[in-house]
Structure formats: structure tokens, C-alpha cells
Image (cartoon, rainbow, N blue to C red):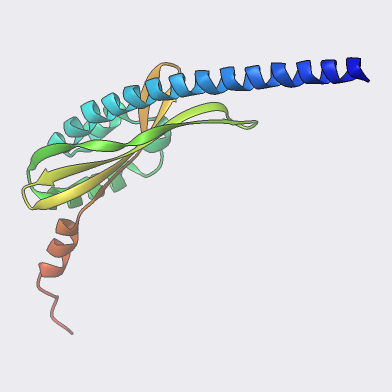
Length: 162
């Protein structure tokens, strides 16, 4: 019985050491990925906002984002974003990186950030989702949220009734 308890205790000790080691590696890797993804977002987002056109977005977009809508739809979206006016200031981003492991996709590294920005016609929040493929970050989501867009829509005169 004593021998059995020693073996069982040794197995638990090995499992605890392996768990602590694995957790430590994930913390170090996660912190590094957070810094890396934030630097990417803080570099790319102002470039896209300065131009507000499909071509600039597509320089950094993944195939998933490029294929998520018809090219004409992207053009319509960016025409709508022009109502925000000239890009004025990028105030930085907040978010984090996530590592997931699934049977379907294997190990997948994504990050989600929200950046506060200022346009000529008002403030906006830019929500950006990225994915790391091999050693390259790519955008899989890019959304501009602003009351300035809504206010401009509602400030237009209503069409006359027929």
C-alpha cells in the first residue's frame, strides 16, 4: 500500500509540474502575442483610416475578409464612411489576443481590439479583429462605429411623400 501511494504521489507531482510549466509558457507566449497584435493594430488602423478606401484595407486583409462581401459592397461601405469627414486623430487601442485549439482548426491565434479615433465630423470606435497565419497578422474584421454616421443619416431632409 505504501508503494502504491508513493507511485500515485509521484504521478500527481509530475502532473502538477507539467501543468505549472504549461501555464507559465502560455502566460509568456500570451503576453508576447498581446504586445505583437497591439503593435500591428496600432500601425495598420491609422493607415486604413487615413485613406478610407477598399484598396488600403485589402493590403492588410485576410482572404476571409476580402471574400466576405462583393467588391461593390465594400465600395458602398467606404462611401458611407466618407460622411465621417477627414481622419483627425488615433487615440490608441485596447484589447487582447486569444489562443484556441480545436480539432477542426488546430491552433488558432486571433486578437480583438477597439480603438478610439476622431474624425472631422465626430468621434468613432473602430473594432478590429485579426488572425495570425504563420508569422503574419491579417485583418478578419474591421468595423467603424460612430454616432456621426447616424446623425448625418437623420439630418438629411426626408423625401417628399407621394
